[in-house]
Length: 147
Image (cartoon, rainbow, N blue to C red; front, side, top):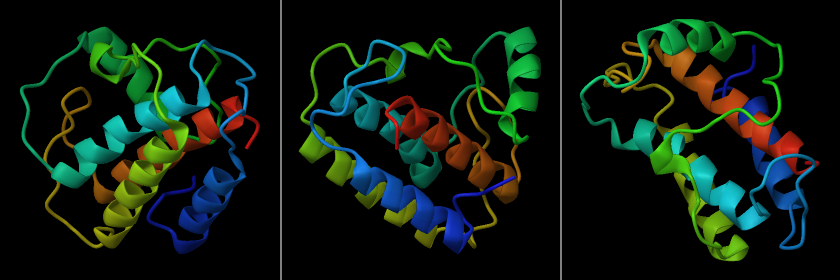
């Protein structure tokens, strides 16, 4: 399983981000490319900020979905998202992609951090799990836009 903390996987994600263009169309879903790169910032920012939050979410969903975070099977299309990660208005692709690239650089620089706050939905995660989850989420949405 790839991790955003692996140098090759990190570079792969960055290169795939650079393939995206303002007019890139999704192969599924309702988001524009600008909304997608904004949406992808939410879990990356959560990891970078490393804040403690009250655990949220349905325990059954948490149990079922957590297994899908750490295997090589791609996520199915049109999965629901949490309300705070829903882009409700148009987003400027160029601006949002730059924000995401900056956040990814910050996250990658933290690859040796050992003290990670619990994830608000999935609880305590190892650094390896954080890296795998981030890679898998980004991969899912880059595939959504053909990158």
